Image (cartoon, rainbow, N blue to C red; front, side, top):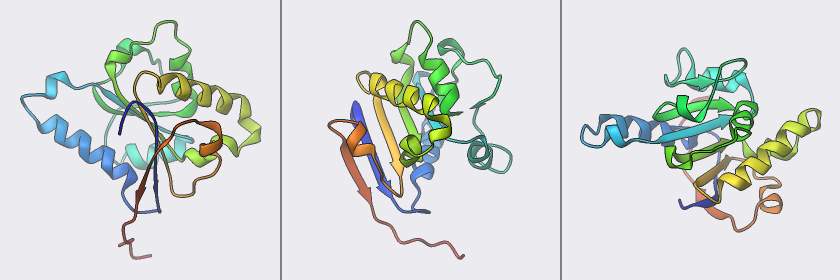
Length: 168
């Protein structure tokens, strides 16, 4: 994964989110390098997804949503989660300190062009991701790619094919 736009395309249940959670755990357990950790911001389109993956019962990491204050200086090291709107608010701050960011991960990226009722927010999100990709690796994640190849240029595509072991 390199600076620019990257997309991970993998089916439901293949571990796209687990990849970032496991990376966070490993980095935090690395006593020698834990102090040098940067932030990895994983964004979800809805608060319900944030709460399920990163709230009670999920992987415990800071969640930024709603009226919570978020600034470049207040970002936690390691994995933190935000909804799309909160990330755009952070992107609208005057000075962006890219040195504090390791990755920006946009989960459910296929929704970036599919929700007309909040298209203003999504257009701002797309523009922020384009700006961010000039400075840090931006990773789009989806099981159902849609318009990502049309709205972003020079995408590094990563396919993951893993059998689904869930018992549904």
